Length: 201
Image (cartoon, one colour):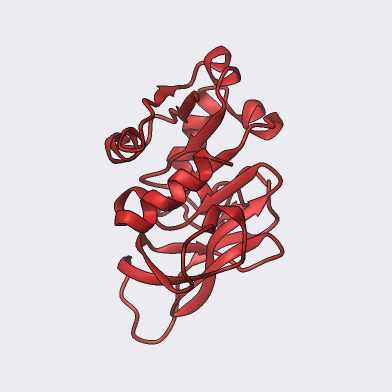
């Protein structure tokens, strides 16, 4: 099993790397297309801002590779959000209303809102999910760890939902592309189970 973590130059990847190593796999962090083409599985992480992740994807010539890959790919947090059509997470005073993302799924990412919520949404929250293999052996309303202020609308490709002010997509899947808004690498044994499910798909 060769697992590659796409290097978008925008994330501290150590927690993801260590979580994968605990499952017996030594992941490779790379933006090299030849190396990525040899991978069995791909992880697209994201920490920071949507613009930073997209800049890393574009600057690293990863855009076409991601859109055309047939390999199982798991986006984590921002890595899931950029699988959407656009994100409202724009730089202050930029004059932009949203930035375009990968358009793999048609839903947009919007700022979380609701009565008396505190942003970012940080901490443990429950996820309700479908019977997708990514959630095999994971009970309904299991707790996962979240850190985010923006979230994707619920849509046709949603396979897991969470509620914080509003109901939002906690997990998605379209063909070989999967994503989770939470951080499985910080979600204890249930997060490890989900990562292991992805590896074994």
